[in-house]
Length: 132
Image (tube, rainbow, N blue to C red; front, side, top):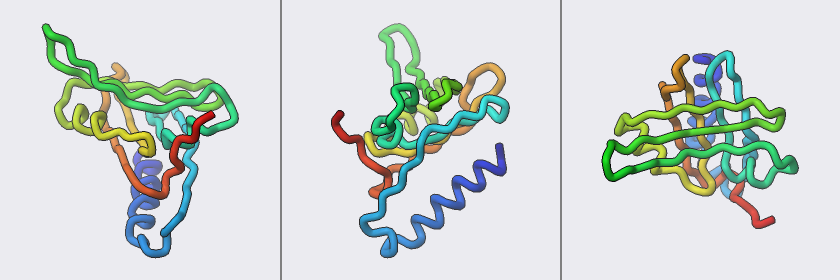
């Protein structure tokens, strides 16, 4: 998991460091789920625009009148593997609230399904959603 996280972060940092070179760049990150490493990742636009009707990724925030808000992130890759996590931690709630149509999302979870890490990256180089 740490190796994948380092690769993801390294790639994101490299892209951010070369902003002038990435003008107009489009990057497609289809959904990946590794249930043994308990991690999922992908870009919302790429998942939405994919040729298969299976994959998805996203995060939601739920708020009820009689309880604390909680967030949920879920993903399914094109082969049907599912990853998900939930939390009421304010930091993860903020991350989930920051998801946009062109977000890249990376999250990890523990053996109880509780989020242990949530990354939401909003950038112009992620492929936006296209109407069907």
